[in-house]
Image 1 (cartoon, rainbow, N blue to C red):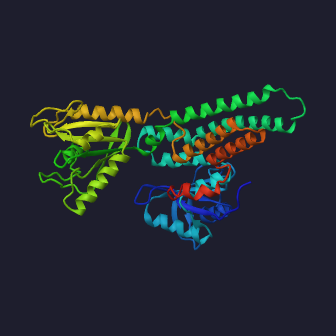
Image 2: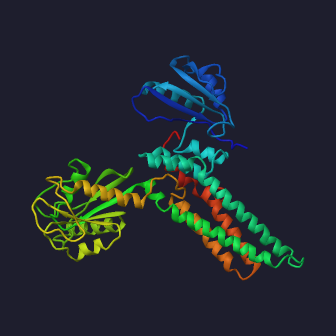
Image 3: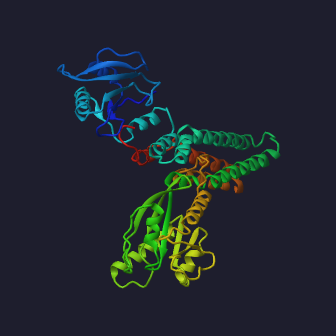
Length: 436
């Protein structure tokens, strides 16, 4: 049954001057409010042109109106959409009329939150909606569509169904211990638990790049002062994002710029030069540079051609996802082994560097769009379920195995929102924009 709530309204399109502005309305009083605003209702789910009027008879707009009776609506409640002209005065006038009828402005994500509470989607699908709204690239959109379309819901339902069956068999072994059940049944349950755990582990491994596809990649540029880090950042993003100067130590804080790598958004971060700091401000810049490098998905370690890599640079290169860049190739000098020679002045080596960056990005975050366990919350819940499956496999008593299986089911229930949903709803829906 739908939850009885206030009737809410919000602009579903971006605020500001536009040809069209879509106002959404949802809740038990939607029918009455729409009739007061637009006169007679159109046929359900059929757009109709209506004159919208304020309670005093003032004409507010000529708009397309959609009447969406529940439960076959996005929220599961009676709902409506008003396709208004996009002027600020029109939007404000219609909003005032709805508020005067008793509706209240929606909170961020409240429409989708009601869809979850009314059973129109589960929590993972709602998170897919968030990701779809925020998607900047085709790869992110594909992955979000899989989540919003119920891909993770179906996967969890299949896992939960198998777990429920195993728990039922385990409970039977406990309940009918003296009924002569086959001795092999206990071993069959244990083997089936192991098979399920292996499948879940494999899925976690396969989806490792999903979080990077969703959030994008972080690339840190590190090296000594005057190594050419800022010039390299500017060359890769194609604009003057960072200040370039012959004076050492120009960059004190992290300077960020966005690019696309292998179809994914990436943040390039120019950092302070790594050296013994001369003052407390530079020391803080060096600390931030090292911190950014430690957290980055990819590191570009930069040193000029002819320079000998110091201990700090060698430590960076030891990372699996570090690319050693020999800058200022136009000046000349030997290129360290394994380094890509680059000149931002002539363009030498830049295509090869971009190709290497794309290669590493593709390995870290495959853009197939198949990843479903793409959020830390998802992965944590599956790891929790796996921990309990591990407990079940080594349980010394049938009752302990049954308890562990129940806990694994609880962990999967928290993933989809079927268990303990209220504890995480506020955190999840805080990410939404108003109107969705």
